[in-house]
Length: 614
Image (cartoon, rainbow, N blue to C red; front, top):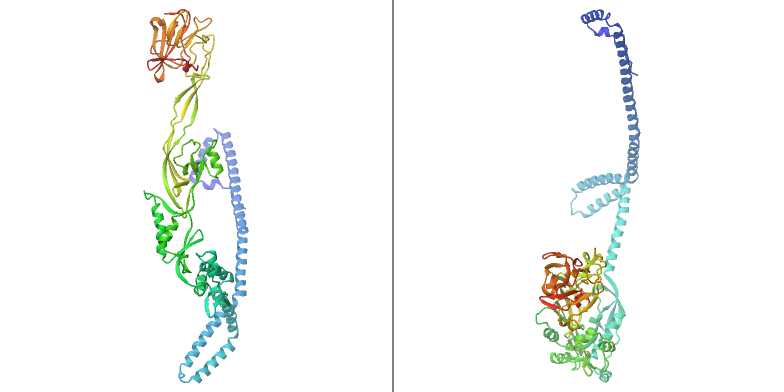
């Protein structure tokens, strides 16, 4: 623990200064004796506080150092223990398992020195003295085995397992490339090696079929050549020495004492057709058929529906089996089956015909390209095409355009009254370019597969405005009447037509009427509204029409409202559908309060009823 001594202030003050301080004290004491005592008390308090803080800080530092030192010892101790354990483990492993290795190395160096010494000693012996050399070698070898017995034992213990493993791998590798097989013998002639007897049986059946190809049943009974049963021997051969059934078949035929020849057999869907001595002649006939059916534009893949197989081998040398190219071509030009026709009867439909012959309406149209949508009694319809001996399949890409339907969307409109609709935008169909992979069999389309679709023109949606505006009209006793046509009913509260459009005669008038007259009980003063939105092109006195209003709508359509008692719009003003424009009156040439309503399309007065849904 730190100890502090109280410092003598008098010793710290120089002598002269002390005298001066005494003088000052003496001079000032009489004046402020009480203030000096207070300052001494404050100085003593500060000194005590300073000493306490200093001692507290010093003790904290000393305690912290002790704590950190102990903590370091605790933290390092496990690592030191682990290091010690690891060192003990390594030393133990080295002592237990590598001690012999160290001794082996030491012994090896020792033997190396002895061999070198023995070699130097033997250099003085003449090479012609073989007996002496053998005697010396025997001496050194005996000496080496007796002196280095442990070393030799260790070498043998290591070398023997390694040598045994090498022998095992060589044995496995040898027998992996070898197999037990049956050697087929005809007398003293070896026909080959097969993995099992089933290979021979397959070859025997194939040989018997080939030896009787092209013969009728009676001929086959007379000339059938049976393959003699061979003898077998078990052999160990390489796998690449095994013979398959096809090669063994040729060997059996060759040794059957039959009249045979080397030719190219043609098989259609696995069934033998004929054999041609020159394979090139056979392939040229089929290639010619493909060339004839190749598309004119050269775009497409041409092939046969049937599986055509060429098998080179030994075949009976007779006219029924061996053909020339001309005979093969003539055979391929024939049909397997003829076309089937259906005669349309009374009540037949394409659906019924397709169902009867297990086909589809699309296939009927493909087989009858000239057939229209309607069929008539007595028509001959192809329901099954003739099937050629070999059918040609053509696969090619075709491009066509296809319409893309547009969608219809509805948009609410506050400018239209409830129950009314207006086409804002007419829909336009889009166009897509479709690339398809089309397959034809003998010219008849059998399948299509879409491989690409590119939109050339996007469709334009059809937009319809649906009215949400209230049907009630301010200042009028009634609501707007919507119609199924383009216009709303032009008068509030009047629904009777006293005179229709066209020729009519009555007690009051006759002749051609260019509009409709709308009236009813209490007609005078009823509110007239715009049947559709548009611009006012005439408003005022209009001769026999009296006070009238004419509105120009879209699409070249105008409406005229005549015999009004008063007007509430002016020329050039835009009005909305259902907006009040005038009052029903009896002005002009009129015999009673009513509204004369006309529809004018491109300058020609037409019947208003279709526009009002009547």
